[in-house]
Image 1: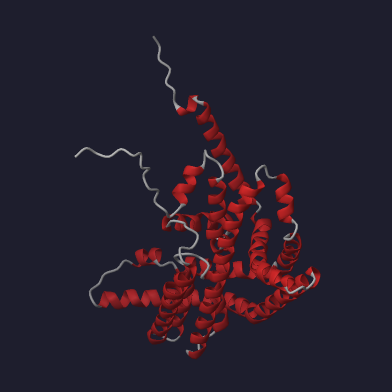
Image 2: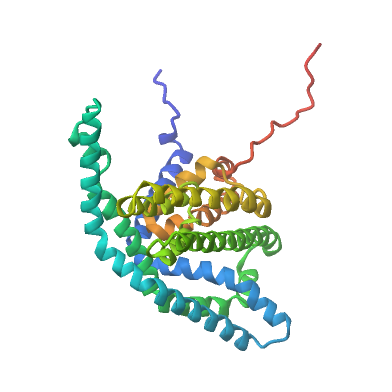
Amino acid sequence: MKTVLNTPLHSASGVRTLLILASLIVVIAGLKAASTIIVPLLVAMFLAMLATPPMLWLRNRRMPTGIALGLIVILLVGIVAIVGSLIGSSINELSSALPVYEQKLRLTLESTVAYLRERGVDLPTAGVAEWVDPKAAAQFFGRLLTGFGGILSDSLLIIFMVFFLLLEATVIPAKLRSILPDPEKTFINFSGFMDALKSYLVIKTGTSLLTGVLVSVWLTILNVEFALLWGSIAFFLNFVPIIGSLIAAIPVVVLALLDVGLGSASLIAAGYLVINVIVGNLLEPRFMGRGLNLSTLVVFLSLVFWGWVFGPVGMFLSVPLTMLVKIAFEYSPQSRWLAVLLSADVPQPKDDGVRPNR
């Protein structure tokens, strides 16, 4: 008798799994292709979440919604104008100087290799050039600066999006209640998630702002060029989990090493280390608690994935975006196991009431 194997490919669940995977690939490809439109929208949603608490506070003080919304938008326009005027010229100036620093880095590497050879350490020049490629480093940092410049250039579009998102914020709950099958249960879960996300964004923004200010002050004391730009980069990259602070410090230390020498570069590195230990390891965990309940591995992989899809902005918002995906997985019994994998919690085995015999 011929036996038919009941493999996943021959079962309904297997076909459904393949369809889900194919749909995910199509969605990811679409998100990457439409990143020029989606990235400003993500930034606008991030700013709208930060602006919602002060707008609600103004409304609770019996200020009309239109006036409260106008004040928030005027504040955002003022912040963007100030930041753009202060660091916009620095971005252009530093971008034009990158080829000079690239040449300096190449000469420094060559002289270092020659010095080590004189001391009996034989290093192949080609191998060192592949390991530390000045051109690749300059291109990476140039793309980083271009990403910041792109956010500033899209600021008008982003502010318009924030305006309309805040305008709809008061009516979206009523619309969702009218279309959801179980609105009360859904809103309880969704409200908990939104409160946790808003708390995360507010605390992360506050600690990032403190990091940026301290970096700017420290670099100004050391008389480092573009101190405000480096502080702004430290502010933005502090949103990037795990490696953001390291990425923010490396260019400053390397440029200081090329310009003024090892002593100043060491002081700059020590300052970054102290600031990040105080803010990132002491203050932030104290206020944030357990955060958004994502495992460290998931945070790192989400950083790589969203950075690949959306560029620098995807890296900044990798944690909130991954939390949205996790919440979506939790609502379906078929995908709840994926939410468990993303979580930092370890599920406890169920107690079936059976006790081992002694």
